[in-house]
Amino acid sequence: MPYTPLPRHFYSSKNLRIFFIESNPAGLRISVSKKNFKLAVDRNKIKRRIKEIFRTNHLMLENGSFVIMVYKPFVELSFKEASVEVVKAVKSSIHKKVCK
Image (cartoon, rainbow, N blue to C red):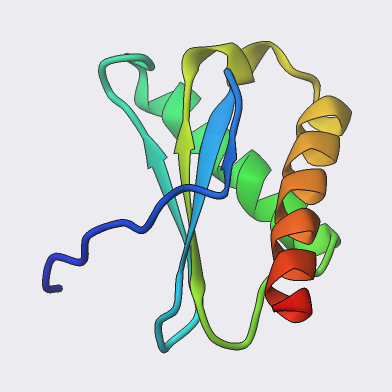
């Protein structure tokens, strides 16, 4: 896959940073640093949690990909807290795109 520079992030907090890339096919890219999360079990749990949030809230778009970079404090969030933060961030970005 060729290198694509990331655009400016549209959401950033101490827990995660979210970018949007207009690409085809649509998808979800999750980056969990090995430096911050030593065990593969922890990295995979975070990825599964984020995928489940996107699936249950129907956040996937038909064209374009979300790139999510996860930071250490994300682990301390409950599923509900993480879900609220991700949904709020993604829906605000979708609203901005529609209004343009």
